[in-house]
Image (cartoon, rainbow, N blue to C red; front, side, top):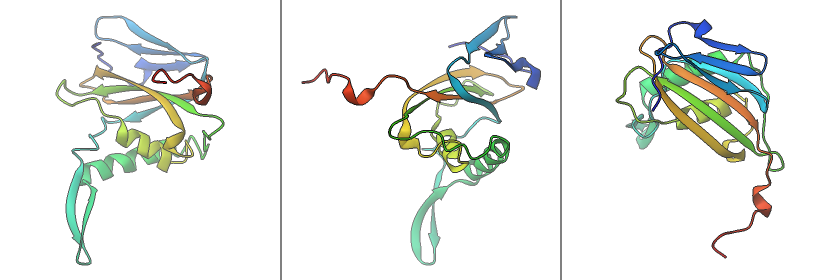
Length: 167
């Protein structure tokens, strides 16, 4: 795992076709954006979806809902994504790929991006998460600036015509 010590917004420099993220060892992680449609930063580390549920009774019926922490993170993420707009990326003919660079405050949390994916869909950045055919998640550490750097692009290969290795 890579260590990152991200201290300010400027340490997530997005310029032209390159994203540079400062690391604690005086180095920079460089990600190319040549194939990305959009790249954006969501502040605060996302809670895990599997640990962010609670059982409640609503009008006499038992329901499982997101925890207050998960709902609060989702609301902050939706507010951040308002500036991106309603892109509605992805379709059956144009599948998507996403790279998540998740910066946690500590080493303890498991790497989890399900809530981030749900928030991206709810904000209208992608039309439906079923059109995400490939995603990659990387875990970093930043006590001063936790959050998620999200890069979305189209997947160029056609998964439906690929040979099935089991047949």
